[in-house]
Image 1: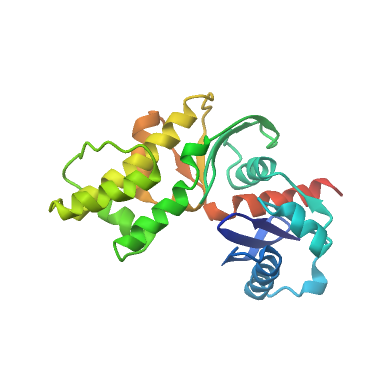
Image 2 (image 1 turned 135 degrees about the vertical axis):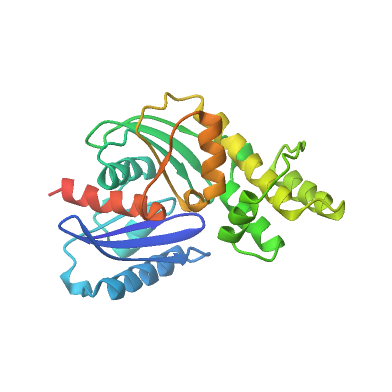
Length: 257
């Protein structure tokens, strides 16, 4: 079976057989969600060595799920939060809370041992696009997201900056660099800005251990370090964290049998 997660920024596809992940792929969503979904699925099939004719079912989730379901005649379309809860339990049977850190939307989910959703909270409009902002700041430094995180880990000074939104954060970061502030300290300030907004969201929902983290931002060691300290909880980053929604879409296919 295959799962598609067609998000604001990236489209993810994964191939699973008997609970074994065989292959996966990510492509930018761009402005053509349907063609992006087709490309991601093709690449995941190639990575898995599975033929498209062998697929028994495809499930789709993500922001563009309804469009993809209609255009590609996919049977199962699953809301993002439902898919992510199912995917989290698949990857960690002991998990009961998921913090999902996507490119545009951040969420905290609580669910039972079967991945059935109990509670959900999502960032407010002012915190939309934190993942996109993280990527844009890395590009502004001329590095990638991983390198930005590693720079932040080298910080030796806790900068106190007045940031209210991603737009002002970028301007503030540039001003700090112009003042001769060490880049690792600026990188750390950027990540703390992101983490403070995620943490504020998470305080509105009971965080029941075991707490796991998914999404592209979950791969930032510095971000997870800061978030764990602010929330005063141990956080476990799921394997293949950006594919949790796509995995959940596959699991939902199985429940429809």
